[in-house]
Image (cartoon, rainbow, N blue to C red):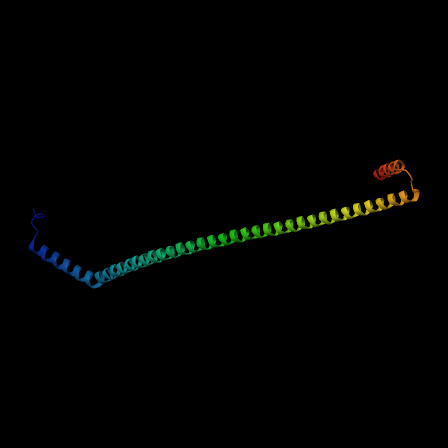
Length: 164
């Protein structure tokens, strides 16, 4: 039973040993341990602050990226719209130029046809006048006495004129 009921001297020595151990630990070990824990706590705090700042910066950058993308899409749409407008204008101008050119060609063709028609009519008139003069000349040269002979002569001249 000695082990269960310690001696007073043993308790005193154990208490002194314990107090000395506490004093040694307090003097040499607790301060460095507490200091290391405080440094560790400060390091963790700084890391958390840096992570928070990084998250905020990432959110800010994401917001900026979204804004840049939005602006780029708007600019792309504007450029495409302008390109479509330019294309439509070029097509409209080309159609208008083609219409004007075709109208000029048609007008020139009509004028040419009209000029050819007038020329042909004038030529026919000239031919008719020449034929009339030839017929009159031939009639006068023969000086035909009878009406029947004049009629035959006119018919033969008309037939000759048709053949030419």
